[in-house]
Length: 259
Image 1 (cartoon, rainbow, N blue to C red):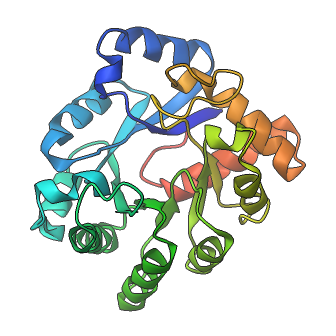
Image 2: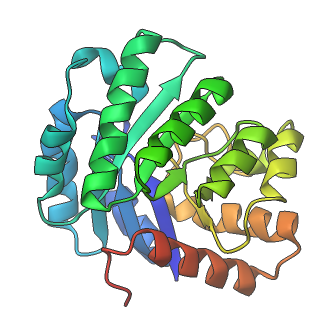
Image 3: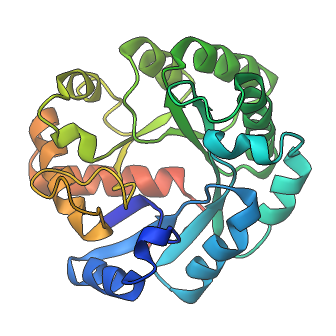
C-alpha cells in the first residue's frame, strides 16, 4: 500500500487542479493521504477535504510560521477540534528559527499547547523543526517528562543529535523528497540511523518535489520516487520499504482503520 502521510491539498497552488491531482494520486496507487492543517483559522477547509474523500484523513494545528495569528491558542481549543470525525493528528506545529515568521517565544508557547493536546487526546503530534535543534530537544524532553505522547518528526532535516533524542522518546520520522536532492548527503546520513520500524514517507506537497520531478509542483503521485530513495538509503528492497513504512504509518496513526 502506498501512503502519503503529509499533503497540503488545501493550498492555493492546487486551486486550479485539485481534483486532477487527487485522481493522479489514486492512479499512481496512493491508497491513503493525510491532509495537514497549517493553521486553526483555516481548519474548516482542511477538514472539509478529508470529509469529502474516503481515502483522506486530517490533522488540526498551527504551523510555527502562523503561530503569531493566535498566540493564546489553548490545548482545550485543539482538543475540541480534534473531536471531529477523521481528525487523526495534532499539528503541524513546532519551531522554525530559519524564517522566524512568528516570534520565537510565541512559537514555543503555541507548540507547548499542541503537545498538551496530543497528550490529552492520544493523537500523534506532527512536528516541524528547522534550525531549532537545541530548543526543540529541550521542549520535547520537558514535555515528555510531564506525560508521554506520540510524535512524528515530519520531513526531518535536522541534525543527528536531535534525531537521537527524539528517537529515545519513541518518535517516528518521515522522509520527504529532500532525501533525493543531490546536496542532501547529511539528510541521507541521518535517515540511515532512524529506527527501522518508525519510518514513514511523505511528499509535503506542493513543496519539495523529489528528483526527477524537482522544480515542479509536488503531488502525492510522486511518493514512489521517495520510497525508491528510502529503499536505496537503507539497503532495503522496494517491497520491504513499502511494507515497513506501511506498518509504521498504521502504528503511528492508529485512529485510521487499516484496510
